[in-house]
Image (cartoon, rainbow, N blue to C red; front, top):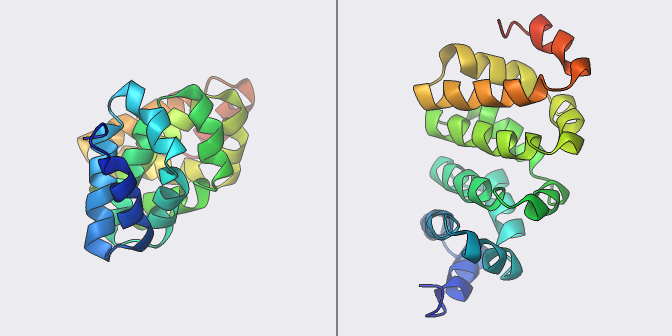
Length: 171
């Protein structure tokens, strides 16, 4: 698909397509991003800021697909910085707060990928993720609960975050 030049077309749909087209393009980009070799090509093609924009203003399905694609891109450590610089935290927090169950699970997964980098943990906490992750841990789907637990565990790696985690009721 990438070799055939479809990536450029998918990015164009993210840029100017219909709401359904953008959602579908984000879905396909997420599927393509499962391949480590394709992730850098996706970022180089300009998909990242468009995925963040879709995460911010898309339909529920579009937001869910955008979060999934961003999560796959976050598997590459150098891309995590670009993701943070693209302003992903506010729309992820919004999705975690009011998205569909799948959207919440995807948002938690992306936050978990970002939290793997110690420098992102404070901004994640400052963005208000912790109470939303605890709520997901208590009442989310099995996938949502697993993703929330993983993020909370990563955040607990830092001694300074353990008290806030306990105060938020994670236990």
